[in-house]
Length: 312
Image 1 (cartoon, helix red, strand yellow):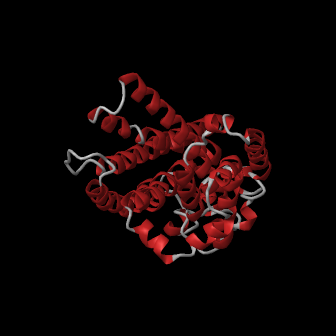
Image 2 (spheres, helix red, strand yellow):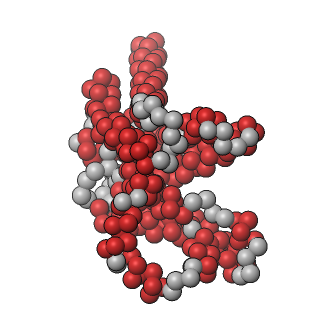
């Protein structure tokens, strides 16, 4: 009897190992398809040229539109049983939709309290002027006609979160569990951003050491950010939250701490930086409590070992 139990356990471990290898390879293939789609067009123009952006929109939207097929094929091939339909696994569902729009974005804005304070102090506009501009249709017409704005605020956040979070996490959670998947998934996201190095070298935009340092910094930053949006996706079970947070962070950029240190009001700004970080960690779990979004979230139904991330 003990020998039979040992054989069964060994077979389960082998099956689990095979599932993990298949999941990782599927994620790697999906990441390669996404990055590769950016280079199917031959051009001597830089990445910010409108013609290049438009072409890349076409290819990346095609790959992103087909990316759910990777999850469907993975599910069919591995025979992993799913309670929720495919769209729900990808974070496209109605339950808890309004909290998923508001709370993760609010949490991210709390983290950026320092940069937001700095931005408001340096802005020549008053608050009412800012509201008036945001409500002006001409402002949005200009934004939507700007290819770089569309890329940074709409297309990149939507496609990257769909591919690197909504499609990869359902494939990683069954073998790795929610906690490990949160830190594994961003590695594909970080490595995918190394393709910027190719363009920096191609157009000789900086020294070799400077480009290398920039690549390492970008990988680290995108990996940390990817872990954060993966956390939001697993906790909320929605795609919209990570997309909005991604768009907001693209708009804000990396916090200009060196500028804050030289600012005339640096004490107030640095205090805002510190307060923002403290409030962020205090509110991280309360504002992403799965009870606001439907318990358990669809992606959490894929794991055989319950995790506290999925319930509280």
